[in-house]
Length: 302
Image (cartoon, rainbow, N blue to C red; front, side):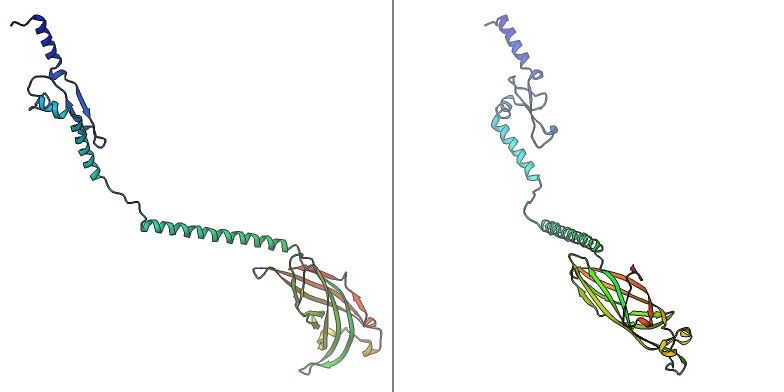
């Protein structure tokens, strides 16, 4: 039966639209692989023949298997499984390096804590030390009493003739600790009385403790017996020796007071030094009477 023109036109149009040059092309890309591994799938309803892409192209077989969703799922699954098998495996369990890091962090924390504690304690100690410096113990020489004075000719231990002097005296010293939070341990160097460059008498003060905000008066015996003066005592005289007017002898009293305070136990210690120098005049006619030294002494720290 002869085909109609309309049928021929329809067939021609259908064939043209289903030509391999106009077939829709789809790409399915695996999440793991790049675009070079894309799977190209073609759908075709043309007559059997060679595919422009694959030389041996079976339209029926390609349509049946390649365009099947199950086939696509299996193939993608196989590719993903193959890729996942190649991925490195990571272990998140505890390891020796983690333990070392933990011990290192703990040691770092302990070190910083010790350093911070030492720094704070040092700062606190410095504050206490600085505050204690404003509470210096006070020292005042109140008076001296010369109980005996004797000058006579004699010889020293080698037999050299010279004037010999003997002095017996007592010195009263007042101490005061103004500190409100620590006591002091007080002592001194030997108290010495000099005539010119000669030491004619000396005495020792016993060490004692002075509690906070307290006062104390200490009496020290300063004496010298048969002290040779050699040529330095040629100008000295004594009423007992020549029967003349009472003798007047210029002397000098000197010593250094040392005070030690424990502000924070044995960890923070403070030391104070007071140098005392007093000009004293021995009057033979006032033996046994106190001579006030309130304005006759100089006090220096250090």
